[in-house]
Amino acid sequence: MIFIVTMKKDIIIDQLHKVKQAGKPVIGCFPLYPPLELLHAMGFTPVVLWGLKAFAHETPQSDRHLQPYVCSVARHLTEFLLSEGRALIDGILMYNACDTLRNLPEIIAREFSVSGQMFPVIRMHIPMAPQQQTDSIGYFENEILSMIRSLQEHFRATLPAGAFEFSLGLYNQMRNRALEAEQRVADG
Image 1 (tube, rainbow, N blue to C red):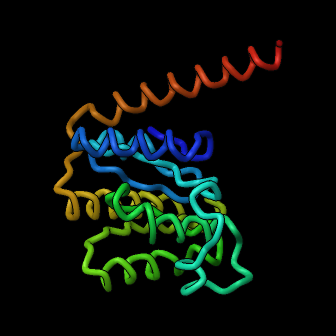
Image 2: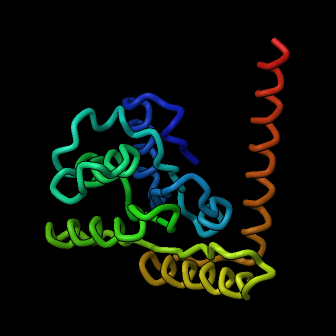
């Protein structure tokens, strides 16, 4: 997994090229909390697309599609995907974290299709209601299953038995190590 927010531009590009050369599809994830374990279990390299200012000091591609008042996070994401990201990312997973992101997948998908490039944009809608108020659990389960079907359809990906549990263990181990490193920094 690659977190763009923590790396320099040249390191990111080098890492993404290595992953692409290894033949693993790279799925850009936006915003910050995608189902990384599930993507990993299906054979993808998930890349959290956050902190892309280093890729886009100016945003001419983004400016063609987004209003001037749209947040810089969405502007830089759009600029990255419509410029350098075209060659580095095989598809993107987005969910509805804000008003801007509700229509951004269509903008990105259309730009790629106009240029003749197939670029899957997998959308997920996260219910914004308390569990007690609606059947948000059933709805969310349906959204996850729909996301899995979309990934299978676009990439011929599978979810082998036991793969999710394996990936869950790896990601939990990574998160625990990150917490331990954070504590060591805090302790000096």
